[in-house]
Image (tube, rainbow, N blue to C red):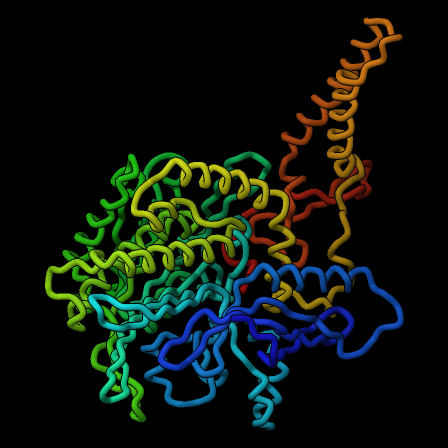
Length: 567
């Protein structure tokens, strides 16, 4: 169902002034206990005043905003706080959604700040503030064994250290990690007699390995991996917050223990050892070895290991709500499984969905929906809903970070590996290479602009100017031009030209193509689409000097552990 009325308003700063960003159309993604949830489908960006002349930088900023909002999967509810887990909601009391919103997942908090400030003195302004989450939210009313229930998933992406796959890795000085997502699985069972709902939720998190590390693009298929710096202070902040929010943390690391990924695995293990934090239990699971040859059902080995290590037997939130009464909490979730691989996407998705499946079995047994030992998967209709919802969630999280849907989702959707799934993974891998090297700089700028990490009004020079020497700027054009001429000389050669002249012509263009191609590969770091609005902590621009004069700026590698603080 589409709706094109009210939704919400919020303000945004730009180079010249303020704009109102208005969601003009939304789509319902389900209802939970009478609370309808929507996804933003369309929007407008409206200036608060008209400008007599155009500003090229201003137009680029607006283009970045539009691209970011258009690509983002943004969800909201007028009556349900999507930013907070149900367990946190039970503790904060009955207030307006925007007043109790978890600032980590309040995606449009910066854009709404003017309204938030105004609402402190003018309460009526509060009705225009609608927190958005970036991630996934869907609820489906269905049945299991003939018993009615609502099943849903909510994934909330943190706005701290947010961005794209290769431009946001690891941890920052404030303890924020890249690609941090909180995923909550929800089961709500109505009581026709009392009007209440029995609700069961299960929370998991994912986030980048909390050390200082980076993968530096250079146009090669595999970037250059760097691990550097002492991350103890930052990781202490991170895990202190995690323990305060979630209780005991089971740290499931799926990074490979051989080859390219080994330094990241060692960095994580050494960090946890140095922290010596009793609230952390580290578990390494060699996903690619244990689940080789597409035996992904062997994730159960990891679950068995977690149980042996003390994962709570009833580690979920359970409560009764509705029916005119306050929420009656019966059980709270006292621990969380924090899962990561290199990207916190594909392997992580498989593990999280299998862990959610295992917990759901226990919840349905507790609720009396299935008897002890009776597998809920026998209900094929619900099995279809579960698989596809988790696969759609995986695609949403992956697209936000990498630019493509997740890999391995054929297993999540179908329970098996297929040839079509392998082909889709190949296509997504190729697309990821293209986006991560040649497009993601613009996407990262969109994140930083929308989230307030860059203030256009403070920029003294245009951030969009290409400061590389002309020689470097010209190489791609010469490369494609020589390639085109080489093809033209082969397929559209003139018959009246002597054979030797024709071949010499082809050889010249081939030589120019080979030279520029080799130059481009040797200087690949100069041709990556780097972000322009906020500096990275592993790349910087340095002056190129000739005869004591600066003739341009080139990108060079560096890795600073804490001097670059990124939100």
